[in-house]
Image (cartoon, rainbow, N blue to C red; front, top):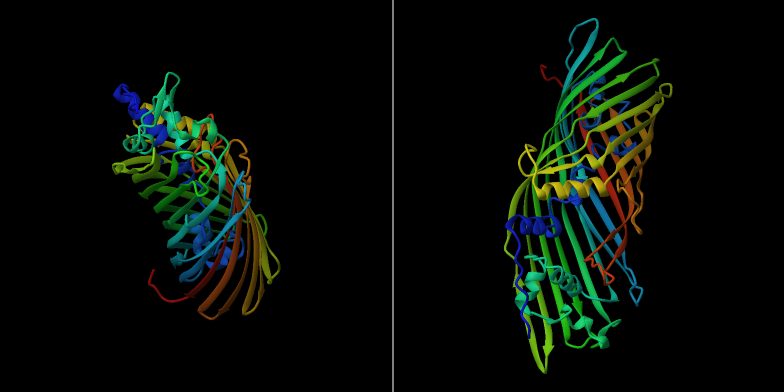
Length: 501
């Protein structure tokens, strides 16, 4: 059987092809994942749909508009444990059986821990100068997405295309050719899926995206109150992330439709750990005693991310009357890259409703095409980062978020509700991908003396697509899915204790 052709490239071109085209990291997916954030925070913050930015008096505002802590007259300490319940409903497009696959999972979380120290300045003009520190969950990556069905084609089609385009892939096609060199004639390399008798035949394919991880941010900031007319705040954000993804993919000719082919499995493992740094500044202005207008700006977050990546391929086939095949494993790739996320701008309005509560509206805007990846602290450029950043510019766009909510105070109880919308920042609509993420929130609170407790439930819904593999000439596979996440939070805390600040 013919051997896999010798592929020779200049080292720089080879590295470009391997990293830009085949590595799972440093791509627009990572850039979007680590910049598309939404603080979960306390149960009060979540119960109002995250719309508390113009109202303040919540430690979570350190991560949105730090001017919010300028209202506080008393010391405050809180902790918020919670649970996330995630569910998915996936469909393999063109599945001849038309079956959907459902999955559900639960995860314990810690959405918020915070301490606020209220300082009395004894100044006529500056009535408060407060310090706050908060640990807040700002992104959740947990998802299990299984799919199953019968369709035409195979992952081998992708590898054959790579070989004929003379692309060496140590995480894919190179593994296949370690097991089987396939076939070759004067038109190029081909596999059993190119045989006339096999074209249009279906095989069963199953897969699982198992994603785990989260992003937290430590916020440290000051906020003050100037003449009960203007609140101001500054904070430092120190985010850190942990993300692991295992993709298990299997193909099997369970009905013996494809000559020679028996089964194939592909496993991909990705791990990311990162830390970053950003600044936030904001003001809240009181045009009247009952109304508030807020403005905030977030600098880019400067991330340093350490990544590991590896794959394994198993391929079994019948050669003549003999069972053949085997497995091959890639080397473990380990590297570090930098990511600079875009600026973020926030604005909001709110109004008190007598002594009974408030309503508020909060909006944010960011251009995710402003994400930039670099290997050298943004001091220069190279073909790999240039190609990745070009992909980011081409595939990502701007995003607008809007949140509205309110609170009704029925002393000593409070009732809250909120709704939110976040635009998914893809430059072009992808069939099967929702253009926005909707969330719905409700909550209850109890406050008496120095003690307070809040509960909230938040539902988030989103539709998306996954591509287990893609090809140019043979239809690849597309998985459309609906995803939901229900978060339940409980905040307990104390206010008014002595700190000496």
